[in-house]
Length: 398
Image (cartoon, rainbow, N blue to C red; front, side):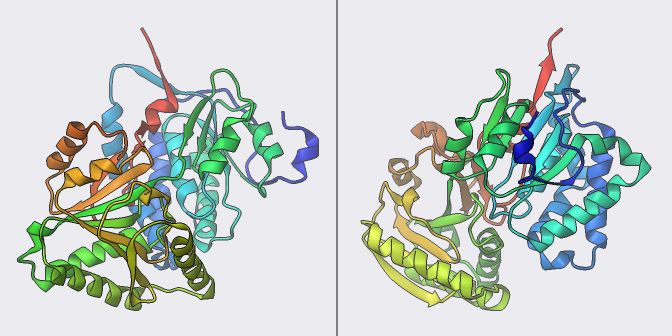
């Protein structure tokens, strides 16, 4: 068990901190009903519409979606959880802890969830809903399978918990991942590690030559959702935009103008965001060896435009409405820069099979997701190339 000298620095928000070895079947009906009830309660909350990430989560938690996901795992085999999972979400993505938790439950496990250290309103709303539902006798048996904890960054506490769990989901930056990999774990502990990743958008310029303004409006709206809801802090948000083909610059300018208008209407920033944005721009100018022009559309939208590709593109730290932009003649040009740091390829104007063939043909070990622009935050059981449900569970051979 955890040494008592560390317990004073750890706050148990809900549940009991214990390391249970009991396993449960995946996609248990009671779990599905519990998650669906969370969805219903979110929609009843008078403040939920203020938070786009909470809306996305509520839709994702609907019973119809969970049953759709479960069909992928339907078989005659017996599949059980591994025991207790330790969840460590990123500090800058409020609702990530909740997705991680649901995956832990759906895969038949008990769960210790470290909550974000920052005080997010949507996290508080969601926790109140979860704790309220757990008071229902129908779900009282789930109480022992959940423990929510909170503590400041502490190698000692994290390493102590890591010693006794059966699996870990670490949604941190590269340094956090390196740190957790050094901790002692049980010999059969399974780790799912989600380090920093880089995501891009590719737009087929040849397909938008005859665009009307309503279609460009829709494209800009979808791109806004992918980029500004989390200030590009989510690993699946685009940081670079590649215009493919021989399209005219007029179309690109219309797109950015539409996006600029959207940010002025819908995006709320403050002094801290402004400072972070300026700091990112200055650091990139000082530290990078890129040949690019800096173009301000509005303060909420900054374009770093380059005429050529650079293998170090993934190292440019963007966010808060900063985007790298360049033109390429064909998708094949991207094979020179894509590494395993690349996660999501958002696309417009392409057939998904065409993009799959591009990955196969070029034998790329980067790009783990291919989704249309507007669906960057579509969460599924396969993430960063891992099947989370299968990894967190074990199949009983017969």
